[in-house]
Image (cartoon, rainbow, N blue to C red; front, side):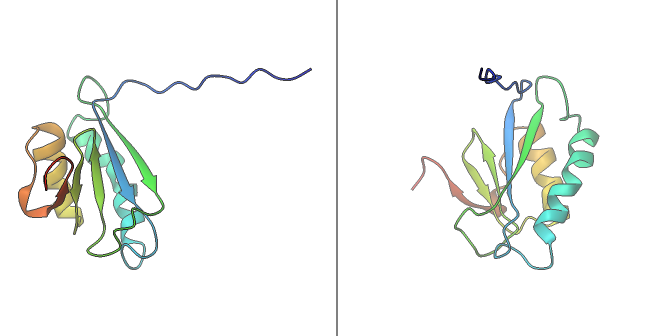
Length: 113
């Protein structure tokens, strides 16, 4: 007798923030520390629940191994570099909460050449 595979569930979210925590992206665990700080930052901005809820995930490599930490906002397709703690505050408040890209940190935007 085989066990039935259980279909996973994920709560509703508005945006998905992907953080590269690979070893070539940043030095001394800065990307992991950034990821670890996101829970508090999202909660402080009111983005941990409700219609603007942001889901966060670690990825092991984006294959863009310069200028990290690197984060990608989906479904917007906006890629940010040099995401220090202060720059993440700007991304959380301006982009994730208010819907405006932080232009000086964008290095790629899906759909734009």
